[in-house]
Image (cartoon, rainbow, N blue to C red; front, top):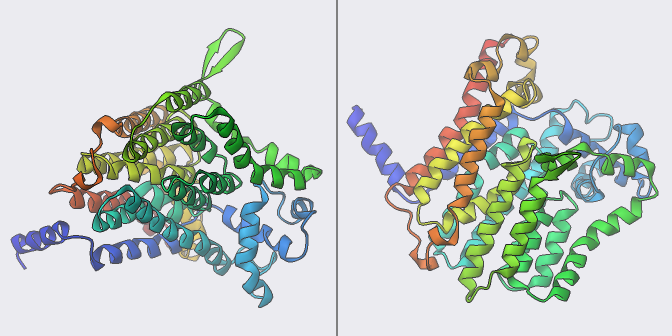
Length: 457
């Protein structure tokens, strides 16, 4: 086959609507990364912790696990969901606290649950897009764009954690928000908060955008905190709970950005977030589509405050992905946002492999299916930071933050479509969406597998 014919076939693929080829490529990369990578044993640690509930340790959960796994840092919700997931294999005697620690079977079983929730979250993005008024075919593209967003895909299939639980319940909340059911919006966002605290930052501006009655704002805010308060009050007498959850250092990462004022420091993120919430409150909107556009814009700004002005763990950025995608689906410039998403992924990876060296890089192959083929320490001969050469985390993070600011700032309603039916992909939209996925994921896995080949027994 000549080069011209190959190019014509490729062009034919990139011009066509979503097809079995797209889903096959997603499945291929998903399966490859699912079995090849994982970041340490945090996932196994959580899965093992959940067996305490299955053994009847309800009120002494945290004390019991302090002996078994060294302690727990999260509220009960995550462990309860895993206890339910692990119930069949527990009853069959297939896995327990002892035989799960170094078992690939246990790792892949624990990883399967958040992967399924990830797929369900893609469906919720599709449903929310339909509520926006986007056409059925465009809504399907929105769901696919969520599933193939490189940073989100990295978080789920390569890093391998369970932040998707927060995202799933947050998306359920959004679904009811756009159905104008504020109570259910609040309830599901409250459940999401029991997994990770990020949804609070989204909830307040979105609530104040549509609710101007101060007493109702207070009422819904209290309802939001009820699930969290319930879990805290149950375990508050536990020393292991208070130390593991309240002393967890990662909880304060987003407040590190400061302006020093003599003997005190001004926390930039807190100031800007309060300003954003006030802006939402004083914004008066006349129609439902304006609420959609402004709410997604405010949510995108929150993601910049959380990840453009704050320190983060790589898997946390999954929290931002649905807002990024929904914002892009309302934009007049779909194609250029696909390009920016690829660039953000590039600098995300460059920062990650330089800042989390020998941890969130080629080292994740040590916890996958190829671990027994590795000769010695995979981190000794060549690291991904060395592979990419450029190793200035401050500069890399600055570029990443700048790209993210551009990415969210130009999702202002001024640059969004006037009506849902106005959305158009453009001639290069699907091409750029597919390329940002393949090239974005390839930017990480190709160097990782090159290093693997250099370290085979």
